[in-house]
Image (cartoon, rainbow, N blue to C red; front, top):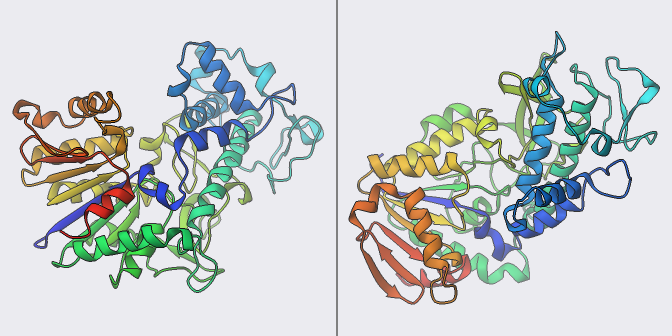
Length: 438
């Protein structure tokens, strides 16, 4: 690792200028999607939201990931601890649900639980997106919440497609007239970063391939994304992840999706038709509801989690043990420890497994410089901007706290801890504009 290493961590705020969804938009979308409660009028997701509010949660603290996490916990609650012995989950042994009459709006087709049984959702109504039924000893309620979760993930993937769909020479949502300016600004910035033989290591917490595609258009000859492919993938093909290269090749330019990609497709079974899920890259966004069967796994004994192409909710650490998530996280750990510059753009520091990589880098990489880009830290327009930044310093950048200094560069830019951290309290587009001439 002799070359200068520039690492980019790109959060949800980094894609807003490309029409990426805000958290509030996804929360509204999830609240209005999915199955209905037994009243056949209230969405289960909306019922979860309202139940959390009644229990004392502040509405602003409940987002789409909170709602999805509740469904994932219900999936665990109704799963067997041991499928073969049909032992109940540990949660079900000690706690009883008071919401069953409200939430479990399904009936079993034919009335008998057997291999390949199907559910009627809502009760007595055929549900078409279950294909060949439950084949892996799922309990009926577990299968119900698997299908609900698959439906919600499909909704998110469909929204990602609206700004990220791209096929070279064909339909594209990236290279549109509305995106001309932001595409140019980003491409010019990457050209500057790459001008001195830098190794450019991009890590996205979003579910798109936009930044890889833009990097290739900026003149970089190859961007490895964990899968061997160029700007787009041929229709009808699927590409297996190159796991050995992810964990050994640190001298290539890369773009890794730490939380998955809408363009990945889960295959529930391996070449021997065993229940052994794998994630492949394909040409267009894949919808979870289109799977013939919903793959799940127990990373922690007794806690069944759905295997999907995108990770959301609060089970990211568990799902991060599945390939290629695990190897990409390992690469991020390594790159942070050896980085010369780490750009953190549009990330709110809400994922502790990501924060831990940053904290570790601060301890073991004395040369690292960190650049944070986020309008949330604007002190001039929001009196809480600096207080919010202080919270991040205390929770994430603790290694620097004994040497606190602050220097104002301009009204939207400040340096902290000497020159260790520079904060741009502006959005992605405004930041890119400041980087065009040095």
